[in-house]
Image (cartoon, rainbow, N blue to C red):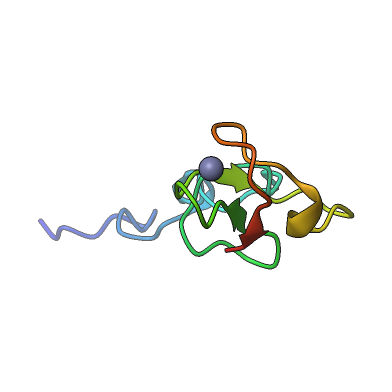
Length: 71
Ligand SMILES: [Zn+2]
């Protein structure tokens, strides 16, 4: 009796690739994310997600109203 299974039980076939599909990059809250990042309030330290097309200095802090800076 040999234990030869022709199937290849240790071969990660199709079902093994669950991750890294085409999930959009709209996750948002990862620290050190890519080009977008966050805007930070220099006064109170609040962070908001940077909006594409809107410079951080055009955003106001939701907490204290200061102008945000690039994070
Ligand atoms: Zn603030």
